[in-house]
Length: 176
Image (cartoon, rainbow, N blue to C red):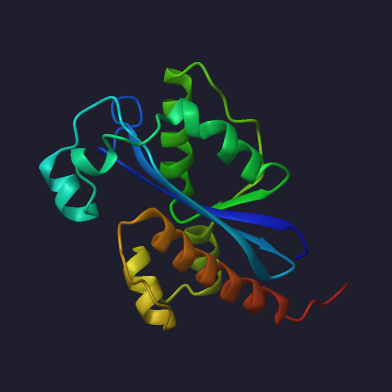
């Protein structure tokens, strides 16, 4: 499949798109099956960072206090993803969180094609016992050095996605 893909991941202050804020965006751009660029940015949230989120991500109030807001980061990220197919692991969460956060700033995400690696895994590797990113990466022998950090998760998802694309390419097509 020849296209430009941007595999992205978000870290947030919680799981509720209408209540929680984005803390970090990480993304990996793939052109012709090769990683050509990366995007990584901490974001200063409007809301507090719960202790369990700070513990899980390593992102606390001090780490983001001098970072830009989402409204300041959005133009650069929008340019980074322009003309791409977006890819995420559990894409409904990431895209829902992004759209809700942008709405609060009076911004919007243009309609773009979106691929969920969980859907591809379900189709191509139906016997995997878990769809959690960490479990899929471990099963596929893919490094995930900093789980719950956006760029690390995006890179692992990109590696999973590239492996899945190879699997798709290897499926013989029979024309009737």
